[in-house]
Image 1 (cartoon, rainbow over the protein chains, first blue to last red):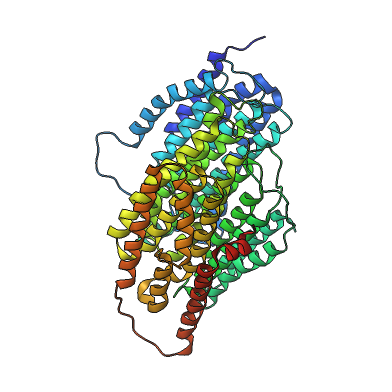
Image 2 (image 1 turned 90 degrees about the vertical axis):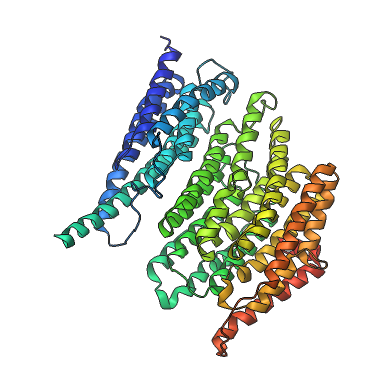
Length: 215
Length: 414
């Protein structure tokens, strides 16, 4: 039974938009889970269950490592002065905030991804309409999120988005090295989740100490 | 010895040094690059250069040039650490990760492995920089250099280009690779982040990027057109030629106009932009040799010029600036002459742009030489040690100027 390419694209686009907009201390894990869920149908359609398994494993690893990093950050004594959710600088008040610029970026990414999808063949597969669209869209959104980042958490979400999108592209290119390549590219996402979780754990412990002292 | 083992040692020593060392023993951080250099000399040498345009083939090995770059960069990094008046031990972590990443990137023929190694290096540096000085400049490093590594990662599934040497695919790959290289080498319009970081942080914080990462990325960038890039080759070369020359001219103007403390960083960026433009736009022998000589000159003089001005070394600094000025027989003169020769073989526009940039470097060097800084002289022998070491480096710089091709060949192979 054939699967509708627009349906696959829609799943990827929705996932990428969620990853683009999500904020907060669990942003990386949420972005990874949504992206893995959104791109897994594309991967499963073209390389079968193992493709979906790679992305599913990546999502599970990201959630576990984010939690482990948070726990480690709270327990271990090494001090980090960096809170990943606090903007590294305070821009002047503007009409459009960071989410507005991300939404604009997500809209701009549509024609870019569309062009890539229809013009750039990948691996041994010839150009097929819509094949690369969700992947190119997720990657472009990741880069735009990187370019408009204000916090370390934003940078980590962007790295995770780029890693998962590239991992799915490796799955689609087929050949002997597609699975190892996909796993290698996807590793960036759990590592970003771990790092963000670690920094969150450190800063939440420090915040707790400050409250205790003030009390 | 495998490059992976060497990278693992860099990484382990970097992490251990930042966890174990204290303020009194901070200078032992220099052991991280020195041990890395020692092991790199024992590497099992590969007869072919690793060009990261293949499939997922893993680590192929270090060739003579790669080994030479890593050894020279490692020694320079150790000297930068030893020359600093004070060192934060946690910089050892950044040195270790960047050294490991540089080793893996230099030895890998796989674009994904190379891109991930460079991503790890950039992520480590950016986190450190943002932690040290949160602000627009350090965040921009994450944004732009991160975009560069993301572009390199994105190019990996499209490689190798066997059977796809024409059409949109090689062009997209060429644009992605050029973006990645330009962002990591801090070539304008993707170079503002480096200028900001140089102005916002201490020299020792920037050194892992400047001394360890840039030479490796430059060598990789030089090798890329030699691989199978098909229709992407002219795109890649022309993009880097144009942005490199533009960056050199713009950076040269800022090297003259900018703050004294940022002058060396600016001059370094101009020289790297010139090298990138020349080796990509005129990939003939003089350009590559010239780039090697300039690289060797900077690796020799960076430990002196990355030490803050008010921390002594007044006369060695002046002589170091003279060696960078481009006046014959300084090593920079020979390097820039070869680059100019290669660019002149292309077109007159490139030559004019390069001459303007080189003129700006000369003016910046003269201004740096004439700057008077108040230094309180101390006669204790311990404070004289940096002076002695600096004069030894100056002697090496003079030797490079007297026998540029022989010494560049000795370090990087022929």
